Length: 123
Image (cartoon, rainbow, N blue to C red; front, side, top):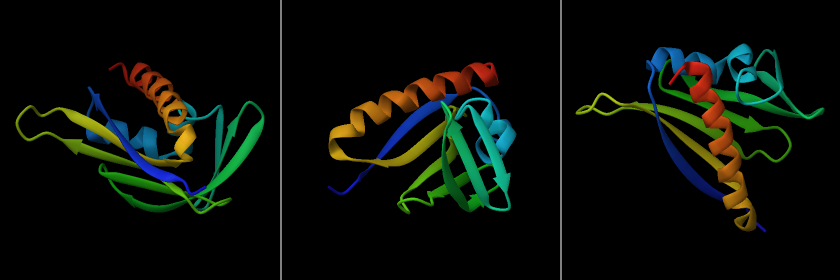
């Protein structure tokens, strides 16, 4: 079965710069995304419950975009930061891939992780 792409959007009450730091650095990602994150060049190792996965940082644009590609299956996940011109709200748009029967579960995991991110940001 092929993985399907999906996107989720969250309003985050903080500056794009503050959010970008939590999305692009090992220390920032370790605060909310994984139990532990280490980096060697462009290769990030994410650890959850003692199991590790590696991803390569393939693209970043300061305060706007961070994309990681999983080494294992070459799928990617991406964080995009946008600001609404009218309301000035900052949003985090997450793009990810999952098997069709795992999309809802994966979205629930993102909801939990982003709730932790918002707590870390004081948002």
